[in-house]
Every structure is written in structure tokens, then in C-alpha cells.
Length: 126
Image 1 (tube, one colour):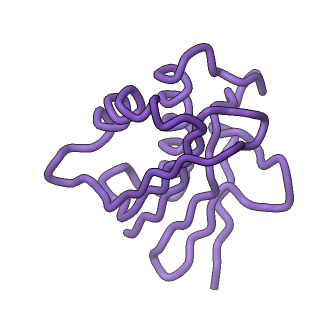
Image 2: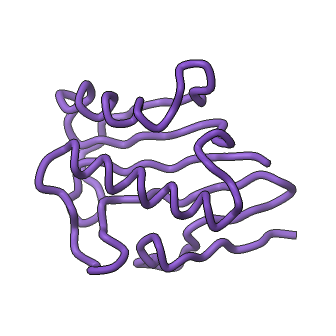
């Protein structure tokens, strides 16, 4: 049976979806963008700041499911400009050790919700 994960420490969904779904020990997060969960404002002054906000939102969703970045098996990163890859990667690397980094793909896309520059989703396991 699936269990819906919901926390006020990450942005509320802006559509008909859940922040995450837990099923048989696997957690599937929805994509997170750089919305500050407390103000509801976009936190996208630069790509590093935007990436930190996205990762902190994901951290909050993971925590609500009693998980951490150590539990992440796979990440999917959508970015609007591949020239931001290095800066995004630098921030992303601070959340994972090389020994425990998840599988990952990074895809450049034409457009993201609210015209943000980055969106990340994750799959984690207990």
C-alpha cells in the first residue's frame, strides 16, 4: 500500500500530485524546484542558490519519510541551461559523498515550471 508523504518544510504541490510516495520501502519524490516553503517565493537569484533551495526541499521530504540523502538510489536533474552544469554539480556534491553517490542523469530541457532553472526528483530506499 502506498503512503503519501507530506511536509510543511517543503513547498506544497502546485498541482494534483504528492510531494512523495512511499511504497514497499521505496520513496519516489516529485520534482522539487526552488520555492521557499515558508514564504512561497522562488529562491532563484543565481543557480547555486537555486540548487541549494531545491536540495533543501528534497532534504525535508526525505526527512518526513525518515530518510536522508544516504538513502537516495537515483536522482534526475532537469536544467534549462547545460552551461550551469558545473555550478549545479558543485552544490549537489556537497550533499553526497563520492562513496555513496546515487545513480543520476542530468537533462537539459526547454522549459521548467515557473520558468525555474533546475528541478530535481529522487528515488530512495529504506
